[in-house]
Image (cartoon, rainbow, N blue to C red; front, side, top):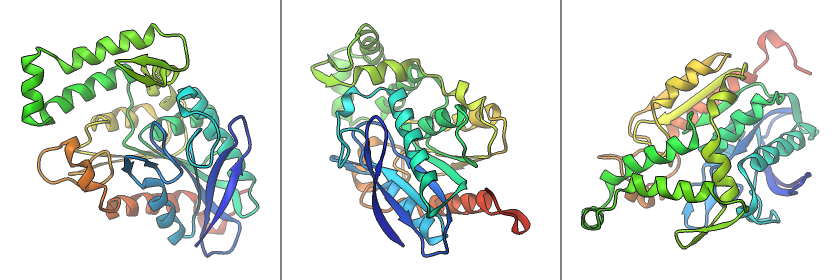
Length: 311
């Protein structure tokens, strides 16, 4: 396995890493899309090292599959400001990365897949719905409903998991977290700039406006290629029940997995689901069974049948 630093041409000129397996070229490949916010090519935030894309790249290389992962705008080696990029800009960036990956001489352009985690899964579905030339999609911890509904659902799930002193203060102040989230949504939808100050913090307002309005089901209904969708039973950020929505919406063959104890970090968590356990979880590697499921599915989907080749 070897890593090559690459530049993705396009509006944002993203910096990335092409990971190549020790195998005869050209090889099949997977384009990896990470979650929301200022996330680098390895799926890491300065406050949380999810490391999903890097570990997926390593697992795929072990099976003879290349991969490309990249820094989002304004992160790592990519120029710009992540706060000014909208959701649809992020889809465009993923499309530019796909073009760059398929153009590499080391890669078999007819055997390329998309794989995304969290927002990355939403981006992958949106790009595939545009007719991107890919053989299949891997959707990890994907939300399949409108963003506004998802964020309110998250508030309902998270409130019971907050530490008892925090819940006490919320009750004392008569603060309902879901109502507070809804009020912030109204403020965000009233903005017109790329960046705005909401609740004392500067946020990527355009991304939020587009995310709140975006309904991934519209994209899923236009997908005809094979799909693997995996979500953890203890995910507090993507609805486990959305696996059923994905299976019903996609027109191509769909394989879904609801993984016991798995959280949004793609690690397993014993006991009640809680965001407060993330820091401990992130000290461990991504769940080995999940990695195995993804690699096995990718290998099956992009392996030519009876020695046939793809152009």
